[in-house]
Image 1 (cartoon, helix red, strand yellow):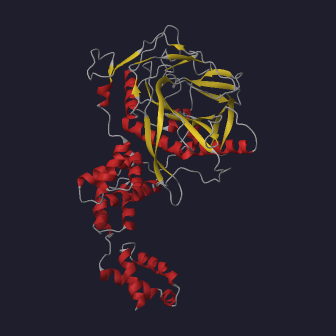
Image 2 (cartoon, rainbow, N blue to C red; image 1 turned 90 degrees about the vertical axis):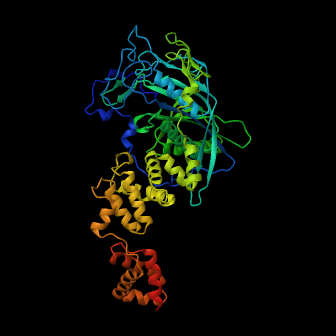
Length: 549
């Protein structure tokens, strides 16, 4: 585990309390605010690239640290939950009290194996733990227990869709190989008070269980890197092995970036540490590749160093150099025996101490790639629509429940309503998907009303704004009691259109005089006079006919 270098002459103190437990979160939480955005075909930034030389190729490899979803830590019984008071979830072993010994958490091993199987990794029958030595205030023992030399699993791959941004964005599938997956404990957290000249240490995270997933340098740019992280998050959430809450530090991404000319060997790489969001992955990798290309174009050389992503300035900044390889003095962990798993038999002869890989494989859920394929083949959804639903578990559950309740419901109408209008209503009311009071039954009823032509899209949006906050009325009751039923009959629509023409003779004269652009304004008058209830497709045809008379 790497750490930011700070002035080591600061005084070190154990953090006793904060005014609020929520203030203990990582610095990136200060600027984090979750938003559900309508799919935009990519994650690229709006800033102009520094250099766009086609003769340079970027090469990207990722290292992802995922906190394992577990009630207790990797080697102790202390709580691993986020957000508690400082230094309240610290066992004696976490504080490196002499004489205490590690006890491996079975749940964490199972989570690691499940993740490895989902990524088609080869689970090793015997793996071991090592001590990685370095000295820092938030690492009381002076070493981190990890699996450097004999990891839990190796090999494997992750296939994921990449959406290239732009007006005519294209989509393609990419595969990235997995080098290894290993278990390790997290360190504590240091908070540096520059004004007081001291460092406060919170050991709540010390010993929190992590999976480190090391991916090979198979990625070409920031878009592919961000797409891989997003797909990995969906996989981990589907497995239930990681919450992937990047704002809580449950998922941290390090990116190794280099550039080269086509056909040349790999260039000198830099490492970008602790990138705090999916979008930041795309931006950080893109900036760093452009920076290196600009340095080489100017005749300079790239330095092998560790950098950090500064979201405020939109650039990577140097943190420390790597010219001298740090010696972590890896040694086998003497207090933990080799970890053995059963690769063939479902029932192990010693189930309390040996895990069965075939038994865990049987617990694998449907993976995101299979779900996307099912949505395309069974429901006829476009690839991009299927990807959006799979990426948001709540949306996917709503879609599947709505579709299963009534087979006659149009999948495309259902998906579009959820992705466009439902998310818009949530954003308008500042409600997250997980906090919404909307039920699948209510959303399905809205689909029925829209599909039957009982209401139009404008009315659907008004209904959804009440559904998301938990209105006691059903959608049908809202329509009936508030007079929101769509005016769909030819006579009803024509009456509204005639009134709009009568009240706006000047615009009628302009249209008939050749200024056809005023047609949109007349349609707006029809919508206003009908209070948004007119069937606008019928209204457009009717208005054109009346204007020709």
